[in-house]
Length: 502
Image 1 (cartoon, helix red, strand yellow):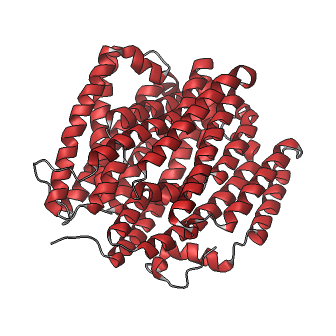
Image 2 (image 1 turned 120 degrees about the vertical axis):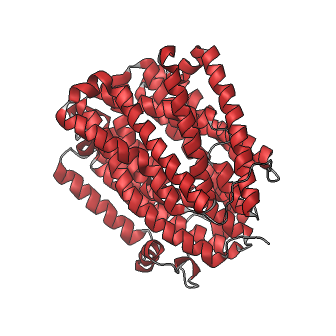
C-alpha cells in the first residue's frame, strides 16, 4: 500500500505551510537585516566578519553536505513506503558521514585549500571547532531537508529561522551594552550564535520527522532509482551555487580587507530583501511540485506555476523600485560611508527583477530532474562571472566584481526561461507584469542614479511615480492581487478554476 499525498492534502499542506513560512520569515528576514545593520553600525570590519562567517558556513553546506539540499526534497515525496523513507534517510546519513570525513580530512591535510576558500589564514588549532560546527550543520541540513520532503512545512519554517532568531538577541545585547566585545571577538560571537541556532534547528527537525506517520526510521540500505546520477549532479550544482554566492565576496577579500567586505555586505544585505517572497515560500516549492508530479496532476502544476510567477514578479518589482528609489538613504542607515555604494544597490535591485522568474523555474527544473541542463547553465554562469571579473577588475574594481556576478546570473536565467517555455509549453511563459517590470526598473535605476539628486523628498517622488506606472501599465489587475492574497490566506487558492492567467 502506497501513501502518496492526495492533491487536496498537498494543497492543504502547501497553504497551511505557506502561512507558517510567512510568520517565520516575517520574524526571520527583519532579524537578518537587523543583525547586519547593528554589526554595520559597530563598523564595516565587524560586518565583514559576519560575511566571512557566512562564507565559512557555505563551505560546510557545499563541500561537507554531499548532494546539497535538493536530494531529500526531491526523492522523499516519490518513495511509497514509510519504512523505505526511513531506510533512505539512514543510507543517506551513512553517505554523508563518509563524505564528511573525507572532506574534513582533506582540509586538515591541505589547509591551504581551506584557506583559499576563506581567502584568509586559518589557525588550525581551532580546527576542532570547525569540525563540531560541521557535524551540527550536517545533522541540521539532513533533518530539515527530510522534513521538507515530507512537506512538514511548519517544522521546516521554524527550523530554518532558528539561527537568525538566536543570533539576533546575542548581537542586540552586545550592541547596546558592550560593543567592544563585537570589535575584539566578533567572529567567535557570531559563529557561537550560529552553532546554537543550528543545534536548535536540528532538534526541531528531528522531532518533526520522527512524529510523522509517513516516516519510520529503519536501519538498512535503500537508495531510490536515479539517486547517484541526481545527487552527483546536484552536488556539482551546489558547488556552482557556492561560487555564485561567494566568489564576489572572496575576490573583495583578496583585493581589499574585511572592512571592504563589510561595505559590500551592506549592499548584499539590503538587496536580498527583494527576494523576501521567494525565501518565504521557496522551501516548499520543490517538494510541492514533486508531490504534484507524483500524483500525475500536470494541470495543477501549470496552474500553480503561473500563479507563483505572477506573485514573485509582482512583489520583487515593487521591492526593487523601493530600494532603487531610496538606495542612498537606506545604505546610510549602516553609516555615512556606506551610501557611496548606492549605485551597486540599484544594479543588484535590477538584477533581482530580471531574474525573478527563477522563483518558479528553479523548483520546476529540479522537480522534473532536468539536471544536465541546470548543471550546464550553472557552469557557464560561473565561467562568465569569473572571466568577466578577471578581465575588468583592474579597471573597474568593485564594480567589475558586482557587474560580472550580475551578468552571469542574468544570462543563466534567460536561458532557463527559454528552456522552460520550449520544454513545457506556452503555459510556462513569462507573465506580462514581468516584462514591464524589467523595463521599468532599468529606467528607474538610470534616472535615479544619473539624473536625480539625493534626498527623501526626491526618493519618495521617484518611488510613487514608478510604482504607479507599474500598477497601471503592467496589466496587474485587482483580480490578480486578490489571487495573490488568496494564496496566503485560503486553502482553495490552487484549486479555483477561475484562477486568472497572464
